[in-house]
Length: 182
Image (cartoon, one colour):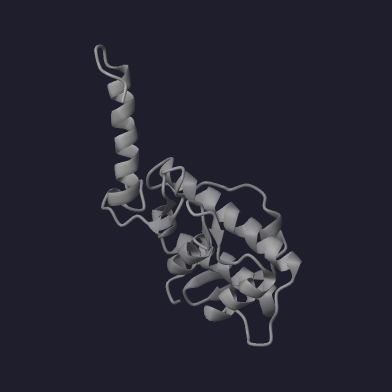
């Protein structure tokens, strides 16, 4: 994936909150996921420790994307300390385009470090504030907010937006004087 935002979104979406399914439930699945995105080589294999690091990284990123709704346009939320970031082999490299993070190892740790490098690339490219997770609590699907004013809240207005608005409508109807309880 050439767009770092797409890699971050794809990684966060490896866990489907609504369905409760994880597309990287095992070290073998993590190995395949990273290899499928060119982040690891054919001989690389993940360990249980790598899987735990990946899950922690994914949920740290999901939490950070939740905060991109807090102050539209800011995207400056600090997700706080994460053992997963500290465990990954990264360095700052000076390039013609400016400083970038890059993995300093190969294998699964290097592949996970590549995801963190993509986060930093999305941030430095101005895309980070547009990366969000759906505000529908049962969904939490990551998406790119392409709205002009960066105000999109749901991954899909048709599904999650409709659910939220229907619940709010029903709640209002229940509290209106003289209304029947639905």
